[in-house]
Image 1 (cartoon, rainbow, N blue to C red):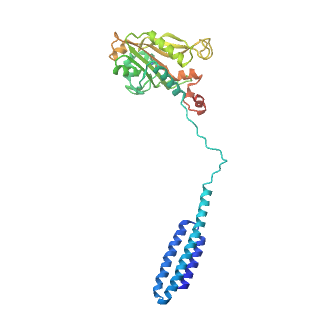
Image 2: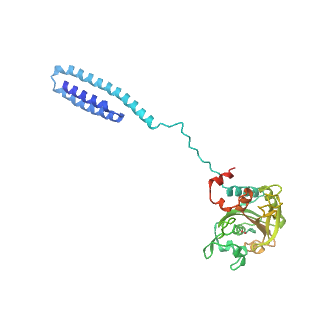
Length: 337
Ligand code: PHE
């Protein structure tokens, strides 16, 4: 019996020395407890008078082993902590990770500014679909099939009567069909034309404006555009209207602003003229009003449409429209507010 105990002690003690983790130490303890139980169960075979002495020995053995387990546990835990610290060690002298901060795209900045300016004059925002029917994009805008003005815009057709809108003017029809005047809407959006060079992109943004009410005249258009020019560029910016042609406006005008670069003296930006063309506009053609169920003898209106990229290029002095679509962050960063 004694030998058994000594054997068990030697076995467990040597095993304990190589144990490195709390988990295997715990497993070793379970094994020890199981074997101790077997030893104790042998006690019933001992002569009765030897049992108390032996019981004492077993108890002492059990107690001393438990102390050893406890002492070993402290060492093992210490080792485990050291390992954990080592693996989680961080070098506080390393340079930190910097997070790039996002910023609004110049097109978005200009679009938001335009909305702010016109919202201040009472305009509400309406957004029409980018895929349009031939009717909304052309026919209802007084541009039936075979009308020569269709050649002004090279159109991407998706199907016989379905296309990528070439102008946000399509939204004018959608608004006038649904609402009764007074109407005062601003319609921003992407438009598409098969056009591609330094100042044209096949996808670009427009901002459309439409006002319909009793007694609206070209003077109202001119006044509103003058206000827009002063707010968007400088107080000194002037507006000039030139006769033009659009099928959906009559009369139609091309609108120039005095050059913000040279103040009208003439420079490279305005090609020496002192003026820069920024938008198309006019009085809503009575056929268009009729097409939308608005009585042209009761109501008149004006509409304008401008290129957002064009305004951004003028405002920030950008000379190639492509830089607005390449998304080179070194370029875009310059417009952070
Ligand atoms: N839709 C025209 C264009 O894209 C611009 C315009 C809008 C002209 C509204 C007159 C009135 O060229």
